[in-house]
Image 1: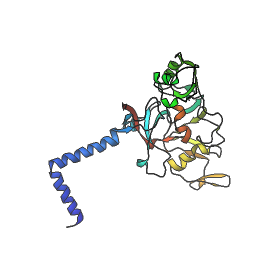
Image 2: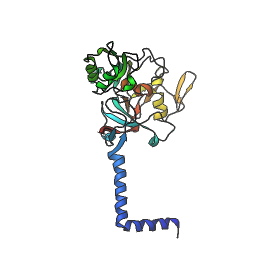
Image 3: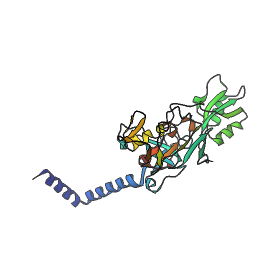
Image 4: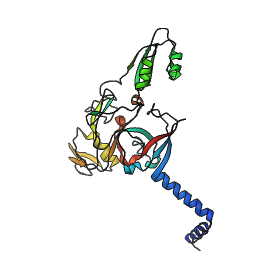
Amino acid sequence: MTGWMRVEMIWERALRNEWSRAFLLALVVLILLHVFVIRFVTVRSASMFATLRPGDLLVVQRWTIWTGIDRADIVVFRDPLKDSEPRWRRPLLVKRVAGIPGDIIELRNAGLFVNGAKAVQPDGMTLSHLVRLREGADASAFARRHGLPDALIVPGRSNLETALNGPLADALANDGSVVSVAPMRLDSGGKRHLFPFSPSYPWNGDDFGPITVPKRGDTLRITVMNLPLYDRLISVYEGHRLSNSGDALLIDGQPLTTYVVEKDYYFVLGDSRHFSADSRYWGYVPEDHLIGRAALLHRR
C-alpha cells in the first residue's frame, strides 16, 4: 500500500466520525472568518495616542479591503519597510488614512490639507505642547488632576512638555495653576530622514508636501529630480528593476521617461502627530499591505 493510499484511508475514517467532521468544519469556518471577515489586533505603540492606547484590543474588519477604505479610517497594515520578511510575517501597524489614491496631501504647521481643503482634525489627535505653571504650583498635583503621567514631572522645573489634544489643552489652559499652554513645533527646515529623503524636497514633520498619492493607472512623468518619490514604488512594491546608463534612467533595461502605476496606494498618519513614524517617514502604503479597517473593541 502506497503512502498516498494510507493518507486517503485515514481521511476517510476521520470524515466518517461525526466529531472529526464537526472539528474540520469549525476549522474551515475560523480560517474563512480570519481571512475574509474579522481578526483581532492589540495596539503596541503610542503613535495613535490619545485615540488608541497601548494594550487596546481592536477588531479589524477584513472585508473593507475589498469594499473600500476611506479618508479618516483607522487601518491595520503590514509594515512596508520589512522587505527581508515574507509579507505575512511582517509586523502590523495601526494608523489613520490621511489620503486615498489620487489625493493631494499637504501638512501646513501640522494641519492636514487634502486636495487644498483643510481636513477635519480627529478628536484624539495630539501635538506636543509646552505647559508653563505658575511659580509655587504643585506640579505633581497638577499632573494627577489632569491624568498626566508622573514621568513628565522634572524636579525644580515649572514647565511640562506633553502631547495634548484640543480639549485637554483647553482644560489645562483654564487651570488656575497654568500661565500658558502653547503648541510646540518640530524642527524647521528640510529633514533628510523624511520621505523622500532628498534635498530637493525640503520638508519636515509639520510642513510636508504637497504630494500626490499614487493611483492605479496614473501615468507618472519620471525624472532624475522626482525619482525619489517613486523609486521604492517601482522597484520594491511593483517589482521592476531600476538602473541608469549615463544620465538616462532605465526600467527593466529600457528607457524610463513615464511609468503607469500598477497598484493603489494610501498615505497614513498617526494621531499622535509628533510621536508617530508614518508616511512622512517612509512613504506610501500599497493596497496589498492593508489588513482592514480597525475599531476599538476593548480598552485595557
